[in-house]
Image 1 (spheres, rainbow, N blue to C red):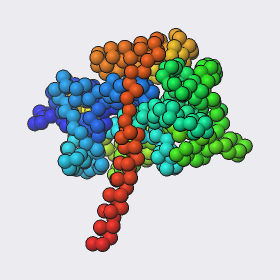
Image 2: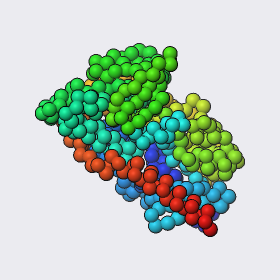
Image 3: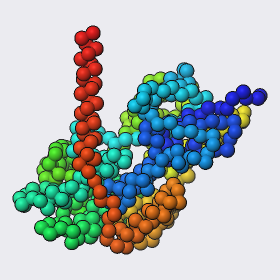
Length: 451
């Protein structure tokens, strides 16, 4: 059968899943791809903690998606926040500052990723930013370096201790990496930068209700990571859950129910993820099951039940045995694209998606990491070299790889942090914007009530 027009594929999101899906559709003259993303940038989320701690610039971990895809002639990029999906009309509805836009699709790949979860305590977000976006990383950078600046100004010993106490919530890879970098920053990189303050006196605490850091990793690697963190001066509060967060403190509770208040101005939330709200929308529109984390339960090939033209990939999809990590997003995105191409060519489905575990890596500090690749488990410098190579490989673009390597050389071999610039606007912008949006919603509701 001869096609009168190209097969339109819409990809929502340009993270790992969306980008790898789009690239897998390159050089297909019968396919036309539209990528819709709220920022029109590809985010290398695993390195956001290095943006927050002044190692890397935001451009190195978040290149413009249209630049990444500039040589893919069958793909275009549109900036917009997707607010709805009309599965009957096959349209994606998005909004931008200039209004609403509808884009038709023949096939749809939803790769909108995940945000931070506060486990029902969203008010914690006001005082403990997550680490899921460039905005999060820049706000944390301002809070981290700003805390040291304010401590230099303060003459009150108690206030100084509060300002130089950093609490990281969540002992998974992100929390471990953040705690390690905070310790490196305080005890090494900022040495000699202040006249009235000794940054090495800073406290870094890592809090999680689980019994050991890096849950899911082999016990030997958990112990290696814990040993390295403690050697850096990080205090491990395993078996403690956070029960309250305020502007100047974190309250934790141990398994016996004893509560402890930790005075701290700067907190980092690295615990828990929640899928994009689009998961709930898809569930309502298609009848697909949505789990507690907001992920959509998909068919074995990644499509939605009753809607073989709609695929959900990456962190948004609930699949047995497929973790919410970058390699899984890449593989599911690429597989969804291959399934679409088979349908366009009139070929049958290849069947269930099979995840190929590439292993697990987590860096703890400079020259120290843990790695599990197949049966091989290693820690220390060898694991750090593996981590270095893998992350450089997956960074998009030669220029980004080169500048990242140069910044790592400066930060890890030397002591410099070349990306320390932060502004007050970055610190308060997220909270101010949330308040503005809430005020607008309240005003709109009031207007509708009076009509």
